[in-house]
Amino acid sequence: MIANRPILALLFAAVATAAAIGCGGCAHKSDDTLVRERLKQFDRAWTEDDAAGVRMAMASQTPEERELADAFAELAASKKQLANAEQKALDRIEKTIPWPLRTIAGPSALGLKPGMLTLSRWDALAKEAASPQQVTILEDGHAEVTTMSRQVNFNLRKQKGRWVIDPQTFGTRGAAAAAAAVRREAGGNAQIVAALNSPSTDQLMQILPREAARRAADMVIDNPGDDAVTAGLIERILAAPSAAPGAAHE
Image (cartoon, rainbow, N blue to C red; front, top):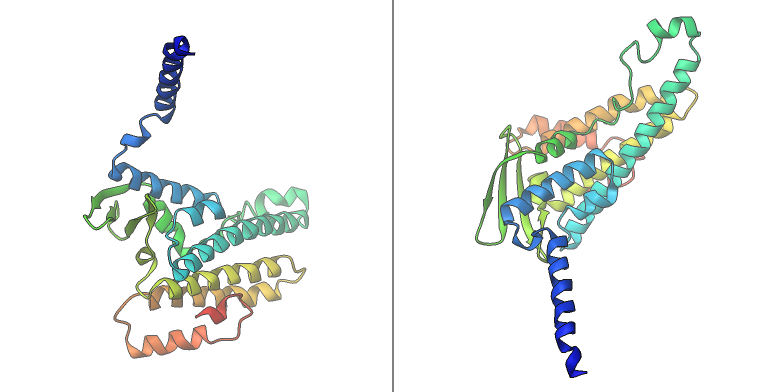
């Protein structure tokens, strides 16, 4: 048994070397690099409507943070469902047009294409995440990220040894209020999907203007300094009857 010790030592050394090579130097990555990788992962997950990937990129230490992460994951899933419904609706419209006219009067010819209804105010934020300009690592375990346009800033922090996106990135009202706004958007997507699946366009024509108003209101209410008239208008819009899931979360 003693004679085999040199052989065992060589085997252990070989395994350790292989593990180090396979890691590709991941243990030596700087916080700057890890923050940039997290933001790129968030952008990729959001672009691909990857609910699990979106949730993984976000903070989830408190109940409010978990609610916000779940809300964004729900919105990502609803975006995918809406894109599928939108494509089916466009295909259905195209089939009603005689084929000689489709090249001039079909959905594609009129500039209608999948993705037009799935636009979200968070799309621009995710796109900004893909190429941060400056990353500042703070001593308290937080990171501040300035984007290329300087119009969107990301806040990240370490959670169980890995960088995650802090709720401050998504609005000034706190995680619970941000989650309510995100769930309203996901609920609106669900209503648009139902309308697209309806044989009549009446429901869709009613829902689209209302959802546009709601989403505009959520964007405005996130900005500090709103005057009383604007605040009152927002409250009336958000109080309008709606079957959107999560509207009661506010």
